[in-house]
Length: 246
Image (spheres, rainbow, N blue to C red):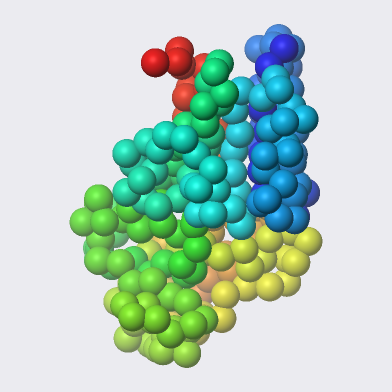
């Protein structure tokens, strides 16, 4: 029996455990998947030591970037993105880091496009946003990233105005704002300028409809949560874990 799991902090909201354990039951596998909720990444080595049957891990907020220093080999796409959300543990204990978020986002976006304007507003600058920006640039989108803190090349929430919102028909929430149990939170953008021409994508999937989505839908926008993205990236992670060691 092999073991898999999720590394993160405050991850009770995650559907990954349910997804994989349901998959194992359906496929009549004896494997298991559990959450490793650690307040500090310095405990990562302890997780590995105490769970010798671990064959693979998913990585979520807030460790997608900081986990890199623990990884022995980094896949080329993960290196370009600068974030890891999937770890394969080889038979000899080597840790190989991948990013399957970009595949999950790319696949889930396919059924929602095209848009008349290829401008995207990405809310957040953390590890999750890196995979999103990677995909958007691959699809030849002009990307504007938004953060609370002013940085070079980054727009602040205070700078968002009618012109910027109208110009960017694709708006993606890569922040944890609105994640269960804090379901009343949402990104501080001028929702009054969102129209029926907008596609609003929230990486959050618990709840299935966030306040970000509700407020945008009230303005006539199409909305999508991150559940399909989770499923696509999880299946890709599973393929990586089950592939033979090179």
